[in-house]
Length: 386
Image (cartoon, rainbow, N blue to C red):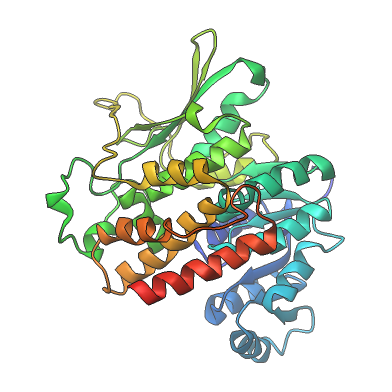
């Protein structure tokens, strides 16, 4: 790099955001934080501001933003903003070299679209952006000459495997999944599992929502849709393979029957760093794979009858793009209800299936406004049913 790259980090207080800042801390000669954004975590945001000295900080929640502004009133170098207007403003700053889109939920879509329209490259960790609006995002990136650098470990692995390869020779994307904490359990085994059980992921340390989504395999269903858009393949050509050790992060099968795989320990810092450096490798001091300690590497077929997340995701995509929004929104509600103890684990699928009964006239290629309206309708519908 000839100069420091200015980063805008959406979701700076979450798992991906905090790990991004850890990399920036270690690579301070290469990166500068231009702006930080989160939903409402005043305490952590204040700490991040004082360490990384951004020019702007955004908290979506107005009251939280007011509290933050008071706490950092001694700092003249930072301006505190709030709401969607604040998120879109920092996403399009002239000095922004890359947007790290790591906010969880639909809230991240509009600032990501704004950044793309402004010609900013994206390190993408927000699943909803492609799951619900891939038909908008991908053509827009091509039009604006914007590159999406995937941050998910699986999509980063595929991105790495495809580098310098002939895309026309891709036969199949092989998306690996750990299987989560309930791998091998039967339907009856899952009837009374607790929140604590669902959060006990064997390999990855993640936020609550994504850990529960991993347990239900909904997360892998979302990733199937993402892979379809990111790598320009048919959804039928994305195959999920359960790989409990999480050493192989994903693979690509080519038409000459060669298979390329990317391996590494379960550590999100590798894909984050790879995205920040635009697909260029840099040193990383963390521990490495010891192949002599690996007793075995297993591959299993997903149990689609018990864990319906992947099946429901692909079905929603095939019905029309608005139904991926329905699938995603229903899962967000179900995930929250499970965390609150309002429903049991298996009822997550019931909530999603109920939402997919809704009819939309604009199901094929919804606009961004129609996507967000569909989300609201799903929230209202599920709220009245459960």
